[in-house]
Amino acid sequence: TVTEAEAGYDVLGSLRFAERNVEDAMVSEQIERDVRALVELLPPEQREVVMMRYFSGLSFKDIAEQTDVSINTALGRMRYALINLRRMIKEKNMVLC
Image (cartoon, rainbow, N blue to C red; front, side):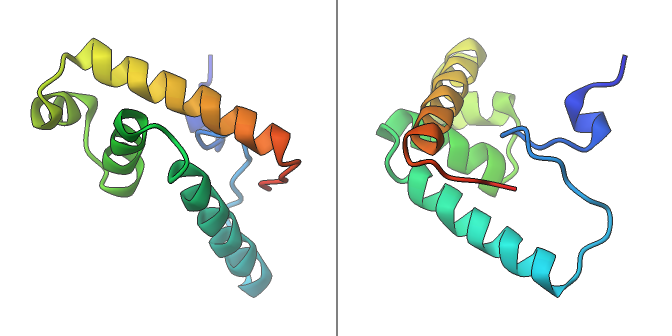
């Protein structure tokens, strides 16, 4: 089966398109600003993992080593961060596509 990542879906479930025009770029920049603002509202441990994974591109192994926690703890923090981000998006009636 094809995973969401392979099908072109990002972490928040939004479909990514292969071709981008100026409008798409502007929308993407606004979405990134909105998501970054929401990330700032996360608890510190969750925010740290999101920043390291999505904005610094680190693996969960690297995140675990740098934060001195187990990989499972790093994965758990990411899981809760995504749950919290989705909740905030829903509460704020945000559209991220």
